[in-house]
Length: 592
Image 1 (spheres, one colour):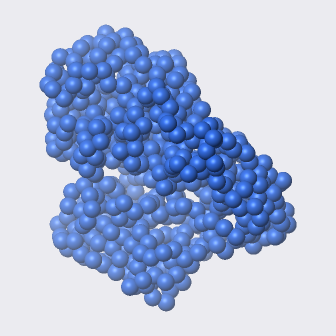
Image 2: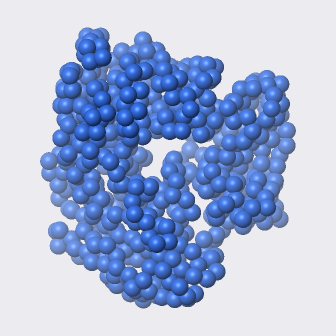
Image 3: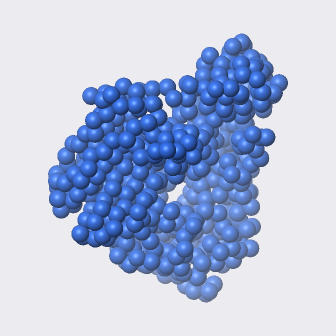
């Protein structure tokens, strides 16, 4: 096995000799990445944050999560002196993709090759990444790995000048063993790791890892890896604790494995993302305020800390975290200091706790806040808080130095009484289900019917209605029925609170077109009935015959109860007579 791997990398070096080529050099557990003939250790960020700031703090690369906007991302990388790893979205079994279906695999392969042919010579391209965490829950793992290798061979035939990796969630022995066995044509294993990130190098070797690895996501322990309050809420690190975590992981597992098995890393997440809480993974606040972890990465990447350092903050101490009586109050306090002696300003914020702690793709909407809950002490280090009702909340203490840097701590709280009505305040219109640049609100998680025949690409880059991408839907069967619902929370059929108050909306607008024309599809708003948390509205456009050109469709909603829309959109196909493909774009609620 080891001889074959050494021979593979030698051949890779010999064939990739053109200017601009990226090659892996070395063997026997000692590898380096070279770009344009010079060593290139990846100092990267994964996420949609500002790329000019990434370059400013010493980063040299970023990773994408789909290829639909690859041209745009590569151009941004080149403009900022960065490189980009372009990742292709590969289907997941939980989304209905079937790795035992040869037609689906061939289609997925061809979608990859089209992009490779078009972008293989872009000067900012670093490497290709085939999929992300498809092994989770996959009943056809061997077929999946063999498909990855088959695609890798085809990519190399077109582009021998850029390495190829695939990405897994952590490294149980099985992942490493199967990767070694079934993927001889894949150069690198990408590893997403959080709570176990400090021991990746050691564990990878112990599991039998012999090819180089890149840590494609690393950050603080995930919401599934930490302790919980007595009422079930995960305990989050302060931004100051996270800064130390990122630095320790980088020094031990990334820099400590440099010129061995590790070719670099992508910190998660470059920018801001709401998942579990508004701050769990973000390296920046929504307004791009820098946090301690960004300072820590800058020092790791450049050897120097920033001229202006972030404040440091303690945990929040409260008089009680579980308020047993309606209208009860509590006190909360924290301490903070600024390493540069800058004057700090305080801001306390109470938000609704998440309805789900699941991994959520591009993230949840920002949870509703309750400014009236801070009844005394706002702007100081000690406040009095009155919870607005029953349910779970999270109290934040933010400090800012006035120079673009900040820190935060938070603590989960539980109240008693009627559920706080502010959690369903009307949303500002237009409110988007899907559009380029819009935040993810509902999730395309409600697969129904003959799910194995569904293929859906949410970042299809060919001929969108607007922007860079659209949704491509294929139903690869002639009979039976299938559909997908956009749900909030994800994968919920009425057991959890969620959804959005769209009072004031008069119409759901969406654009659609068929591949051939004449495809018959039904579209809907709302679906959940007679459940603990149902949709308050059900509306449908039934059996619409699509045209080949983009066409605007409307689902009228005037006079309907839109106070809880849990199913924001959906499509259904029934007995089409043949396999069909159609496209969707610009789906939104409007007052018109």
